[in-house]
Amino acid sequence: MANPNIVNVSRILANTVTGAAISSNTVWHINPASSGSVHKINTVNISNISATANADFDLIITNAGSNTMLMKTIAIPSSATIVAVDKSSSFYLLENSKIGGKANSNSLIQFMISLEQIY
Image (cartoon, rainbow, N blue to C red; front, side, top):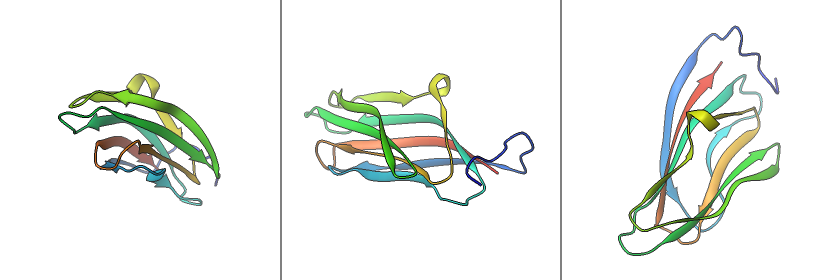
């Protein structure tokens, strides 16, 4: 089921995913193939936790093995947070899709993704 019908859903599960971005492209959240669900990405917040160093990050969507850059080399000042995705720019991760990213340096960037898993 590549694109589930969300008109007659049986359940909607709230989920929040958090973690740290590293200097190589890493999956932060995945909607596996044949999950029978679509995942609505409501918000993505990216924080630079360094008190002194600026950081860059990329935000990447992969759909069936094909990468799309949502954000490329976005600079985040030290001790700052940006809202990469909010309710006005939310989107759906279909089956066999994932969201992830990378930072220019390990241990500077943390992320928070708020989403709904719709079955």
